Length: 427
RNA sequence: GGGGGUUUGCCCGAGUGGUUAAAGGGGGCGGACUGUAAAUCCGUUGGCUUAGCCUUCACAGGUUCGAAUCCUGUAGCCCCCA
Image (cartoon, rainbow, N blue to C red; front, side, top):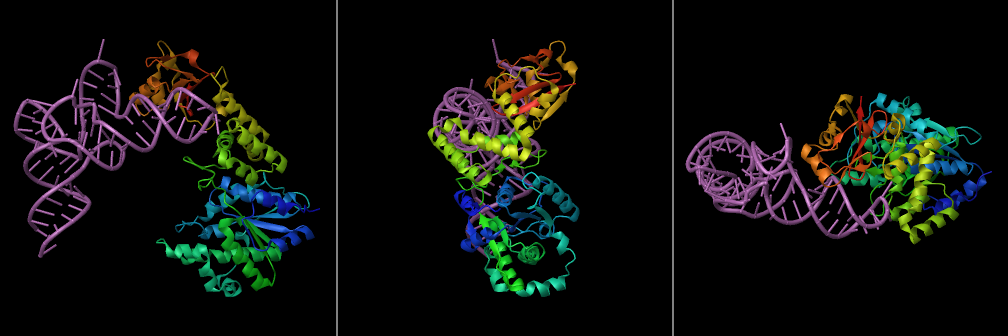
């Protein structure tokens, strides 16, 4: 019925950062299916890699026979969690929140099973918070919150000591999240809240409130944050976050992100984010140590993650694109296939007549495609051997592009350097 | 209010009348090497119709055959005195 190995698995994967009472939690989980919840902040209309840790946590619980609740913070999102934030946040508008909640909800279906006996629940705390009057809330919930304890929380203290300070609104955030836990216990019998390690303060606040309001022992478990070896948050690039939504981060970019993970981080990513079993994990680890150049672990990680988030189709197109981009010359393709491969590559449209007669000057083409800010820059790229058309290096600064350079019906693929692509569409 | 200093390219920073589009470093961009890595090395880094031309050293004017360099004014920053 329920898998007794769950905690052991979380442990070997390094997913238990803190837990309020491991022994009692183990007994509880062994006693039968439990309900566990994690809150998600709807700050955007898509989740990103950072949220995957939490989604996978819920998924692991569900696969072990428990019921997951993904709580979208429609109400708490209006307030803003001060945990780990150095500055007061801007409040989101109600319409924005609604759109975000909808977007986030659809992505969760990839991770959780909303059917069957342990069907996941997707709840929005706005539903029970919106009608809760301020007076009632203060009498029911606020009464059980000693200010001294609240002031002792790291999230509050660090902000009070900082220049940014902390508004009453954000200070109150903790009460809202704590009340969620109580509410979920009453309505759904939820006894466990999980989350990232930055949520510890909020989680324990909920547990305290549960003891006071319900006289019940609730449980909290937090996972470490997904960071690189040198302490930076993973899932971020110079271009921004890695999103789960295909229209924000294409399957190809998503796939490539994982393929490029550093050796030092790759095994931790696999442990934290995938369901790759211990045996294969050990094999991958050995392979990485023995021959890091083959990047076996990175490839497997990318494959697993892309498959889950973007499905078989997304994975195949990402692999196909990678093969073409990192292979040699781009042979004859169709507009459709190039469009798919270079979905996230900027493109410019040019009049087809430019290709007539003596053709379209390469320097102009690079400028037009946005790969060079000036003619000089384009010339330099060519002189340095960093200019490619359809992945073939161009060394002649006077080169003219003609119909024969088209990689498909209307498209040419320009590249500067290793991976700065741009498309020119000749209409 | 008075006196002194300072202002250079993406950033830092040399340069005080004549190959100075401006040393050096950082960063960026290329390339080689490699594992679509790290480290390293090399090239490049104002614009253009590029063996040439044009525009740049806070801004505006002036001296000079010739100015980033000298003079005057304006603005920003810094220091000292009141």
